[in-house]
Length: 111
Length: 114
Image (cartoon, rainbow over all chains, first blue to last red; front, side, top):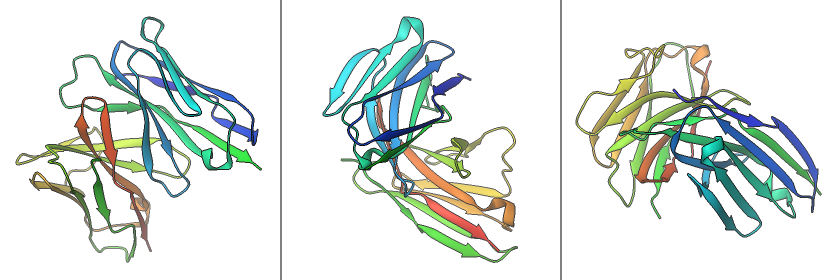
């Protein structure tokens, strides 16, 4: 399967700071997604971004498929941004839709 | 939007008993359901993929007889942890693919076996 590596593993920020999370993947992918897992365990879709750039409020993501990486940008961070951010990749040609997850970045935002 | 309702949210059971976790798709038909297990501060580990009306496909190392998955309808998939032991204590999450690029997750079940 696809190897997905995320960095940094942990990130501590003061409220208002900006950050960049990185996701590298080992093979060509059909899909790359970013999720946020809140402190209660709920996973939320952030971006479906197999290539290009998307923005949603203070969050944006860029995937450079040819270089096999994706970046998640968080601007003006808030305490509610705390949690774990996962990227997950769907292998090219996958029919069932099995995602391969990275180990995540644990983000803590302090007031 | 597409919602998967997962129950129970948490359960404590005695060692040797069985526990059933349900995931229902509320406003869509889930042809495929993914079942994950997550240990504290770790990533999601795929346990099995279930398809409506057929046997589940288990990942290597996952005991089929211990983690029984049933996907009898397009709106209900269940995971039964049989003869649970303390090492089965974990956070279990189900997920369905709603459309290309769209995955929805249940809220998770925290299982504690004592």
